[in-house]
Length: 98
Image (cartoon, rainbow, N blue to C red):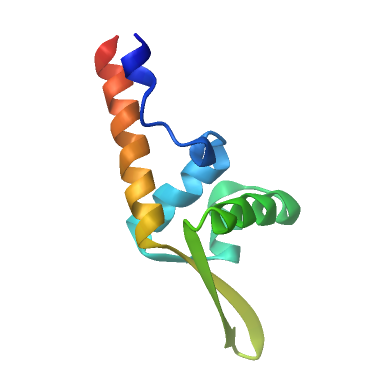
């Protein structure tokens, strides 16, 4: 059974961080407001989860202005995409091990 737990990434252990990464993998880029709408998190919690992924090198951001309002966009880095694929493969392996 030990083999089934290899490949998991601690950065994705929190459900919000995993959801953020999956949304980014699916949509390419997502704004902070888009995450808030889809994940129903507070600004502080969402910001902390995004910062953790950014600190890991899995997410990068860019800032734009839309109608004179600042908008922060996030996307997965290549490293983040690879880490997410490994983590999801480990989940699939665990499901198959049952």
